[in-house]
Image (cartoon, rainbow, N blue to C red; front, side, top):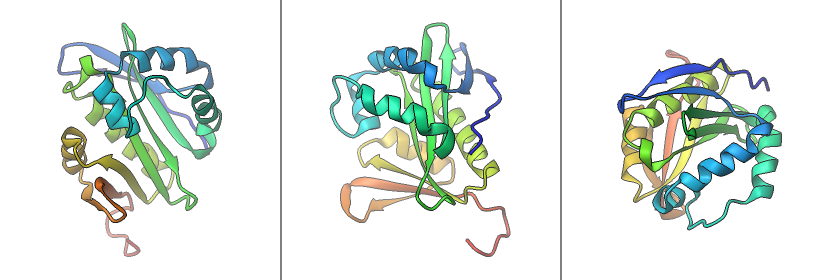
Length: 177
């Protein structure tokens, strides 16, 4: 899969700007620094468990495989990476799963919305027909964002502590959805 993503400059509601660009395998150190700036609650919402230290082995594996499986983007401000988002194709390449993280100081600035819109567009451009995300039921901010973006939000069938957010990416009028 092609991982090309044209960098985009974005002005956020906090009056500051970021450049949103593709994440590369060489970004390991800056991603680890961004992880350190994620507050405990943001880490919990993103990883669905308390995380004191990042899993470096898992990060390296993800960085090495993202170009074949999906797209990962980072919002880079003056202080480094302030947000990340990604989608990864499932075993069925017409479906993908998304994830987003924004450091606490940038929460509520519109950054998460902008990154999710970019992911949706990129996935659709790559032929993905459905995007989904698993979100903790208590993560109201993420659930509101998903609903605003047109995702259907339901309780996960196997775990009522989770919600399943789904969005059809099929072109309008496609009878197969």
